[in-house]
Length: 222
Length: 222
DNA sequence: TCATCCAGTTAACAACTGTTCTCTGGATTT
DNA sequence: AAATCCAGAGAACAGTTGTTAACTGGATGA
Image: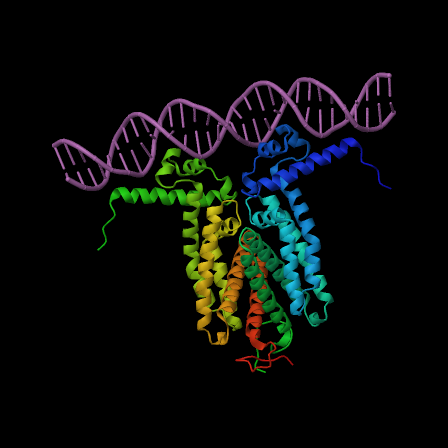
């Protein structure tokens, strides 16, 4: 039941996408808070005022970019996590998956890494919210795992955030290494996989501690 | 011994510091790549052209800020790491130490978190180099620990980077929580300390893995 | 077919940017 | 005491910025 969208709205969406693409390109060498409205329209080849037909302001365009970037990041995180249990080969495969994503969408990854702590509050908020949603999904995925037996909801979420942050750091390192030699990328991959493995080991022995469950305070002798 | 620096060079250093302070203040709500030269001089109350007496450009001022910010961050990381072995109370104390530093130098912390992946390459490079130096020091500190027996140099460095990144993430979260309720800050602290603990557990069991060899201090899971 | 809509255009605005060149007056050195 | 230095001031430069207003012309729907 596809309504063929009309040649007019189609053209509009096309220009809108062109604006997003141009902005993403320009953001390779600057941050969002210094990106000019005219700069973007100039890159697209339209009049500056046409910008307002699509976005209220640059921060507005920024939040749209967050949607796009993390939408494309979404499937990666799911696949990565579902295969991120103890097995060593699976960790290695997850790292390769991250590397592949950085290769496929370098500008998106750079944008998220840059604007996560960037100077534009609405964009920061949008990224934070999206990452929190990711962490929730990761938590749900982790909960299904047999190794999560006995884990509290809070602990699962804290592990999920640890994974998400680690993925972003790794992605950012891959991005830096992209302009380096093949050997640099391999070294990044090796360090990242060992860090991931250490976290997995910590996860595996999380419940080993004395006194069993619950809180850390009041550690009693066995 | 001390040559009292002359009233002229003293005044110059004073203005230079005023420029750095003003820039740091302005960077609370934007990123370095959008910071204007005139904006900074206006905030200090001097003529725009006087800027060139102290810095070649805004990126140049940025790298000076990196020096200042990570110089103040330096003692924190040392103390944090030297007390970051297995003990639970020590982890808690390390977290408090990070929180205290964020409280004392919020602008510095924000600057580093923001410009680490920011749009100004020389500044990014400066931060990367300084953090690498920190990781090296952390590695050396870790190497002194009895628990590091049997660890390769590479593995120690990978753990050190994990710690450094984790500290930055935690610091950034504290920064966000600073404008929230006291309860928010407490929740950040709890999550951070549990993440740190999980990493410490992973560290403790790092050498447990297969190979059939007896481990140095390893405790095997049931 | 004809009136309506609306993505994109053109023109103009005050305000701002980085950088150059020349100048000044108090500190420094001789 | 005189000569030098140099942090900062002042003016002017060509460009840039975001935003407003009134417009055009092809797609749309009656």
